Image 1 (spheres, rainbow, N blue to C red):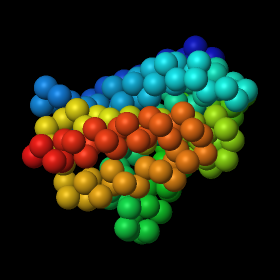
Image 2 (cartoon, rainbow, N blue to C red):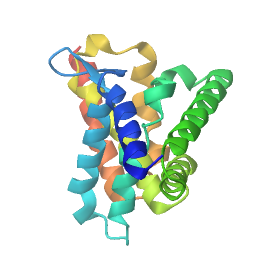
Image 3 (tube, helix red, strand yellow):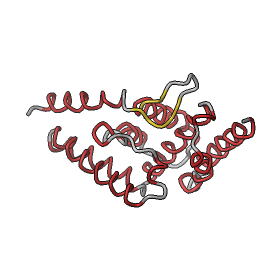
Image 4 (cartoon, rainbow, N blue to C red):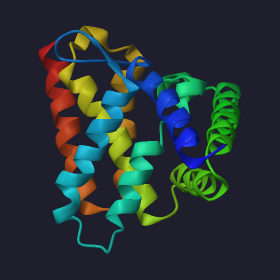
Length: 193
C-alpha cells in the first residue's frame, strides 16, 4: 500500500465522525457530531495558547486534539456518564478504542501509523503537559456544549458531572479560570430552569 492510499483510507474512516452523534445537543436543538466537538476543542487550544505561559508544543497539542476521538469512527462515541460508575463498561470502551487505533495504525505506513498511535496513547495517558491540556479542553468543551443546549436535554447525572471537572483543570490557573466560568454558566442554566 502506498502512503496516499493509506491516508485516503483514514480520511474516509474519519468522515464517519461527521455523523457519529454525541450525547450533546446544540443550541438550535440538533444533536452534535464528534467532528464538531473535536473542531471546537482545537479552536479552544488556539484561543487559549497566548494565555498559557508554559512552553507548549502547539503542533503536538493540535495533533492530539485532532486524533483523540478518531477511534470513535470505529468504536463509536461512549458518553462519559456511561462509564462514570461502571468499570466493566469503561474497560469495554478502552478495549474497543485500542482495537480501533490498531486498525487505524495498520492503514498507514509504519512510521506515520506509529506516530499517530503514540500521540493517541499520550493523550490517553494524560501525563505530558500537552496531553493534560488536550484532556482538559476536551472535558471543558463538552460542558460548554451542554451549557449551550436546552437544559431539558440534560440527564440527572450530567447535572452532577458539572462538578467533576476540577481534577482535569487543577494543574493550570488559566484552565481553572475557564472551568470556573463554565461551571458558573451551568449553575445559572440550572437555576433558571
